[in-house]
Length: 114
Length: 111
Image (cartoon, rainbow over all chains, first blue to last red; front, top):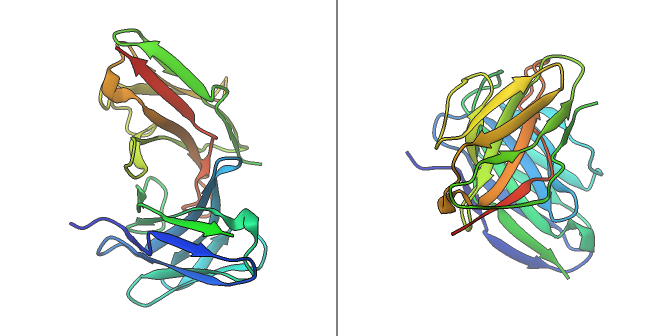
């Protein structure tokens, strides 16, 4: 079956703009998590969604938000972009919210803020 | 607090040599530990997890609760093992999927 897909794959924005990234999980997967990957900080958890509800949130400012739709697709939004938001944003999906559950990662969206 | 430490940013070995990638963690309960791998131009993928106790691509990892470690080992490295390796932890309370990653170790296997 098709893997996790993320769109767009690359994005260039300027400071102050906002951006929306999209993630389509593997068919049947209802849990979606987002991560930010940077050379300095590595992989950091942003938030996770299950059944359209945010279940957990990482330590990021309120400019970072997300949502999940009834078909399990998820979007994350970053408002008032800053240079430091330049990163690879990864989405991961899993079948359900449970321990011992494998997460599958998408290819990521590379965001560059100028 | 949940924390994962991978002390080596870079690790270089020759083909056929043993390799060990170190991972230490901090967690107040009993976590679930994983090793993820990212080959060049590929997505992050699960290599193995402590709960399964299996060997994948010749790699094994044993959870040592006393030393809070989950080191990844392979007796004979191959060139195709060159990649970024991330150790990750997931708490077992609350049902969260949240993974806490180490900073990663870039393994280079030289011919």
